Length: 178
Image (tube, rainbow, N blue to C red; front, side, top):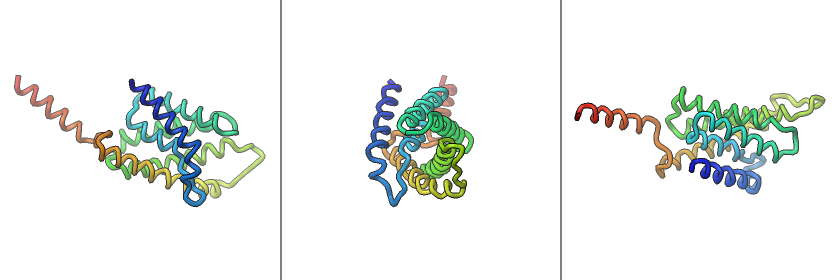
């Protein structure tokens, strides 16, 4: 059943990226909805399934571009791994922390994929790429923060730490009552 929801989410995100991302642009900065959707999905999928999902999304994103394959696969898998690491090690407690991490990862992923897709005879300075990717990263990070906050408000996503205390107290109660 989980893969059915993942398939539906993948379809919706890719349709939004291909049809509506440029319409959502503020100035010249369009959000990277694929990475935003992957960041939100990383909270629900764990283990190797997340790696496979990130690699699949990266491959599909590479297929949508007109450049060489593999750049987005690398960027998406690294971004998904860092989101999981951030959840486990940093304890991202608020949606705004998730949005900040998403902004940093989108910024790095856009720079990495652009640099990997560039022919070796062309060279653009890292400073120019960084400035160009900054608007997209901030916009996408804000979207991830808002979507995470909305998910917390409607109860789709548990707040970190709220379920762990309940499980421990229930287990302790069950041990002491027997």
